[in-house]
Length: 279
Image 1 (cartoon, rainbow, N blue to C red):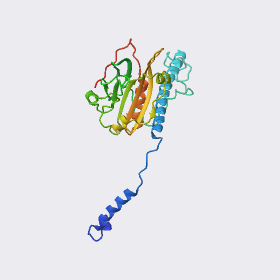
Image 2: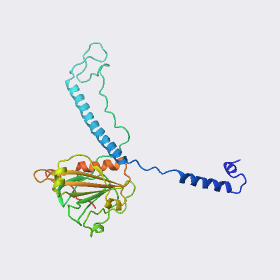
Image 3: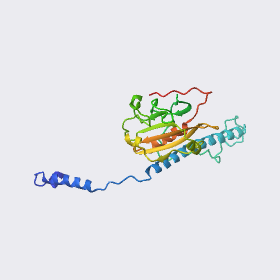
Image 4: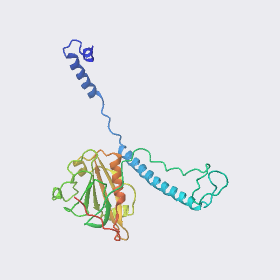
């Protein structure tokens, strides 16, 4: 006797059909659970913790290496031989005694961390003093259809449309078509409003969740982040606003946006010139 015989003992197929109908009814009766309201805030918090762990790990490794080097430099050139007979060994050949603990390795960050270092540094012609690093594999484009107070340039982790797609736009345009799951598109603009410059100049806080704008919603975005960085200080600071539109982001996409924001800086004229957008 088989499983089919138990479901349909008469061999008419009626039992199988009823079972399929029952499965459909059970699926329809199962309530759809909405995403927690604080999902993005929790992702941002995890991304911030991951960033802090990486920094702590780097600092710990540096301190361990420095202490080890200092200990080796301070060790006597002549030490008892390992045999314990009292003979003198050659300088630098002694091994630490059993009571000497080796430096503890720096603990690895908890959990997987798929976000690696950023890639190439680029600049945009409309704001030549601004430099930003692009995540590896992301695409870039200079936005030439409008002024820098509306949009300077675009970064995205999926294909970007030709600039002509936004040629008739005088407001923010996201040239990416529809965002796929995990898709992200980042734009920059030059802040001109004195009140915003006063509020955000010299600010270095992470990007924050904001209400999803109509431009982001139009391309399938579900989350919007905004952050600010100053690229020129003084009486008239140059303030850049980063806006990121994401669709169903994971912690990795949010962390990459935070990395991009932190990489915005003023160009160092003594270093190699950054590349332009690759398109």
